[in-house]
Amino acid sequence: MAGLQSQDYIRRSASTLTPPSIRNHEAEVAKLIDVSRCIGCKACQSACMEWNDLRGEVGHFEGSYDNPLDLDPSTWTLMRFTEWENDKGDLEWLIRKDGCMHCEDPGCLKACPAPGAIVQYANGIVDFNSDACIGCGYCVKGCPFDIPRINPVDHKSYKCTLCSDRVAVGLEPACVKACPTGAIMFGSKSDMTAWAGERVAELKSRGFADAGLYDPAGVGGTHVMYVLQHADRPSIYAGLPDSPQISPFIQGWKGVLKPVALAGLALAAIAGFLHSMIAGPNEVQAEDEAKGRRLLGEGDEAP
Amino acid sequence: MIRPEGALIRYTTVTRINHWITAACFVLLVLSGLSMFHPLFFFLSALFGGGQWTRAVHPWIGIVLVASYAGLVAQFWRENFWTTDDTAWLRKFDRVLVNQEEGVPEAGRFNAGQKFVFWAMALLIPALLLTGLVIWEVYFSAVTPLVAQRIALLLHSLLAITAIAVWIVHVYAGIWVRGSLRAMTQGYVTPGWAWRHHRKWLRGLASREPAPRPEGMP
Image 1 (tube, chains in turn yellow, orange):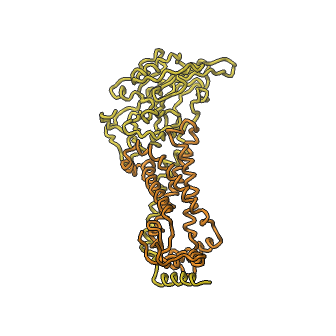
Image 2 (cartoon, rainbow over the protein chains, first blue to last red):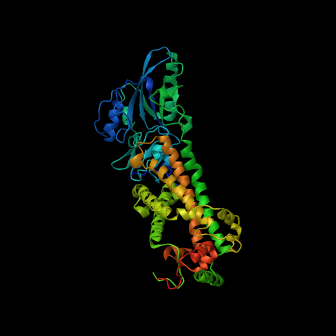
Image 3 (cartoon, each protein chain N blue to C red):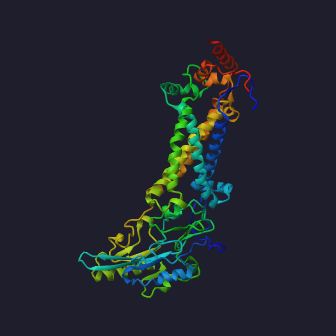
């Protein structure tokens, strides 16, 4: 969205100042993916490619419905198919639309060293600004969901934008528009949470006792949420993290180390300055020269 | 190179070139690394042609530094073994700090402080290389697990900060002990300098057969 002023940032990567944030009277949005209503048609994947003009290289059939096998720089959303045997021994086909979760507390943004390369708008969308991206891959390490992918050609990081360009002008994301079963819904986060409640109640009435909403608190909640039939076991859905959070290594690096390290280095420099002022330089004295030369002279004369 | 009468060779031409290549690499690595470490320093990336260039060039400078420091290790390791004299020297460090070196155990070619810097860097630089390879996105991101990359990021930063702290000590010592910088730029020290700071080294030079000719150095 470079070139358009959004002026509604609530977070901006690698920034020590408050980003332009005056136009913040926006409802937080959310995309709700109801896994129980998904038929695996991949219309969302196609719509994503079409709207965003993404065309990945044609690969090979790998013996799975997952196609391509993983997210990549030109695959921002991906249907992941899991054949899961439930406790009664029946097969359940779990189909999860994978992609950026648009965390309320985004690990990618926290890890990013380039000012403004990752931003979060007041509506909650986490967006990558490729002009500022330096291709370091720190966002990949910061992300608890393993979503961003670095393009080896232009060294830029890519992921789902939640169609921030569409949402900014009052449209729903392309995947939502394309979904034929209503498995992907879009609206304010409160509306989506309420709708998910109805869906969960219905699933429970149909025997899915552990049905629930996936809106993980470990990342402050997400702006992409799932209705899961088995919300007590998210990881059976092709490795959806059970309790995602920003890695403690990333937290330690970006939380504690940054200020402590700078303070430590500043103290070392200040200590040097003070020593220089108090003790002063260690200079060779004339008597040192005399003694040094005498020692060398004696060395010469030694038998 | 013009040197005064009686000058003692402290560092050969090869050593000095080797040292300053290492120094240049280290400074460039600090500038580019800090720009990717803290937003306050991101402006330093402009020195390298922007963020993308900084990200791309930093690891290569690191490779040059590793090779260059290996050269210094090859030249200096023998004279940097820790001895009981060094421990005794450290015990009198309070005297050294206030420039009163009489009564402090005589130092050989390198004193305990210099040995500390030498070995600290000899450990830190390979560790920085290893952790740096893990987070070298372009070549190694596909062959290491994400958790290893996360740990490597934290370690690389920690090690780098430690190395910068050691480097501050090293640079300040060079400013503090007058005559040291010239040893590394022009290669020589005076007999007085050697007497004051590295008397055991001077005694070694004096007793060597045939004796070094301090007068009329070429």
